Figure 1 (cartoon, rainbow, N blue to C red):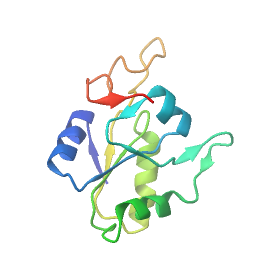
Figure 2 (cartoon, rainbow, N blue to C red):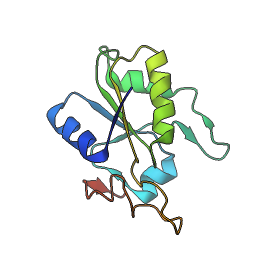
Figure 3 (cartoon, rainbow, N blue to C red):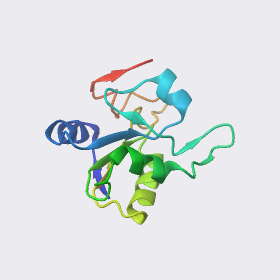
Length: 131
């Protein structure tokens, strides 16, 4: 798996229109915190029990289509940790071009335990929307 900063991921997505951009945060995060423009939602894990979604790989395969093994997949979560785990699962399932967005959508915590103040997709001013 390759790791891209948010800006690198944005540039990669712009130059690779066939890439699939997956936001793997919870449904509530995706809907209420916001998400990158163009990102499709497939939860890696979700409440109330926060167990790993047993259908994650299958759902991504369905979105990726018949060329799922060779299609680039870019994953983003809140801070880059869940998306790295999800990327490992995709690689084990045969995906060959998996990219993780480091620092994720909201970025690392600052000294006051706030996000989006140090790094991440929103901090970098990249396109995002809220439902």
